[in-house]
Image (tube, rainbow, N blue to C red; front, side, top):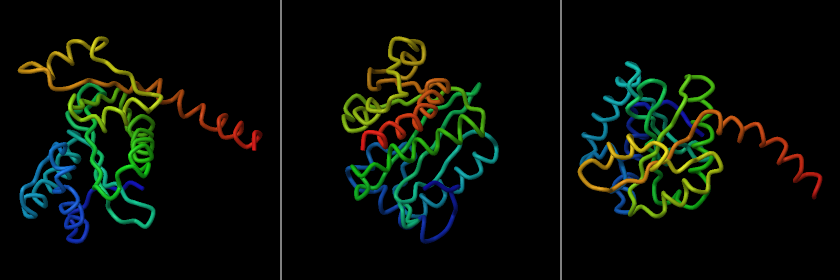
Length: 186
């Protein structure tokens, strides 16, 4: 479902086409206005990951086709900001939650990240609702007021969400118990 980013013609072409859709493009953090710029940004992303500045993965569907990206930007003191986007054809099919679960497992259990922040534009209703459905996400506008104020220094644009490692770990620990209960009920 996830793989490290690559500078590969076919993958870059597909991702660039998906990213430029008008329902997706406004919400992409690393915008590219041409295919060449997308390849350049992908190369920069790979180099920044090698330097420990970010973590980036390509999201794949069940057939191995690229459908979006998921990233942790601005890594500092075991925390970073999540940035993810899916191409329009993948919207509403459950890929977002599956990609986040897989990415968060890697971040928390393999790469020692302690906190993941999400800044979501207040006008991005689809993303805010998706975040609020996840059982391990906390709205952090008040609890992380200094981070919230920094994000919205010029103008109040973003809501802030937090995913602490302990809450995500609890979610993962409960999954087998929930699956066992569902089997017994069936």
